[in-house]
Amino acid sequence: MPEPPGTETTARGPLAGVVVLDITRVVAGPFCSMILADLGATVIKIERPGEPDYARDFPPFLESDGGDRFSAFFAQYNRNKMGLTLDLAAAEGKQLLKRLAEHADVLVENFRPGTMDKLGLGHVDLQHVNRRLVYTAISGFGQTGPYRRRPAFDNSAQAAGGLWSMNGNPDQPPTRVGTIIGDLAATMYAVIGTLAALRHAERTGEGQLVDVAQQDSVLSLTESAVVSYTVEGKTAKPLGNAHPFVRPYGLYPCKDGYVFFGGYTDKFWRLTCAMFGEPEAADDSEIDTMAKRFDPEVYERRIRPLLNRWMAQRTRAELEELAGEQVPLTAIKDIGDVVNDPHIKARDMIVDVEYPELGTLEMFGQPIHLGATPAEPRGLAPAVGEHTDTLLRAMAGLSDDEIAALRASGVV
Image (cartoon, rainbow, N blue to C red; front, side, top):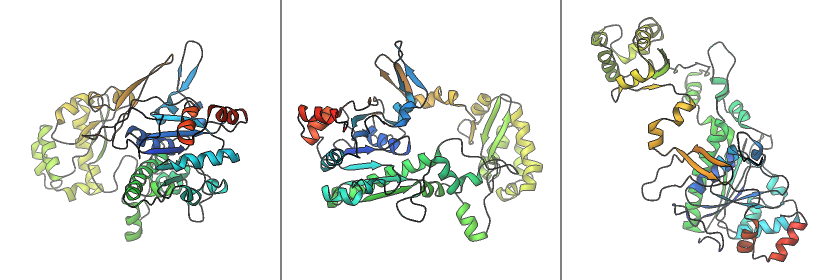
């Protein structure tokens, strides 16, 4: 549908004209709607007056000389959005959300299941207002099942989805994955589900519920763990940097740090031996096939020492240059290395945006690269309720006096 009058943006991406109501907090929900915004959708971030998204208080901060500050964490996940405040607990707030939903294509929320239903604003309620509305609900354990009402964070999903039990070093306690993978995985599936449901709605006029659980999302990232258990009865355990069966495929020390090397196929192994000046090693009868190199005892006795000797003589940069386009070898980079990586810059994966009086924010870009309708990740995040008046005039048809009265009563 066309963008509501008065809310037009400069976005010209593939989702231009799609209107999204974003009633989410922290990461999983805001990241989902941010991707939609980068792709051109008009995203309206709805926060409660006096109780905005508490990610606004997450460090680090951009700070002005006068002491004003803005969360860079919040800005990264809420760029390209419009801001509106609305108290959904108030009767007037409920009615206003329904009026906004009449003009929306998508609503994204990440409350605990049942919360929006209690407010009279759940999927079924809003279907009566707008049958083509895609209602995307992100939660810890999903909208159905015995755990549906349990509170959850990212770590809850890592624990309940099995990933935490698999991560870490052998004979040590499990270790959480070093990023919020439960939130991020749910984000990706929510975007995919939303776009699939949006396609269906555009074709049929019928919206639907998109139910994405963090636990489900994490479980789907456990690679071979499920089938190893169901077929062989094996329970995945922490392996450190090792792969369950592929060798060599892991971390190796070098002069100034570590590299990942994954040349386990016969082709890559032969190239590797020649690259390091010992082509005869590829014909050694004990390690000349992939199956032989997969054997744990053979790997520890023959392959690992050989690779350690080769790597120890060179720096990360020297090893990457040596490997070039021949074999999979990559320096283990810290985030500073990544931000300054020329390839990352060439891919436009570090973008900057100027916040007036606060300075320039550099943040990650948009990994979805479209040839004809590129995403635009350079956008400001809204101040709390920044576009409330504009949106209520354009989408709810309210007058200035009506908006002023709502503001005085604390509804907006």
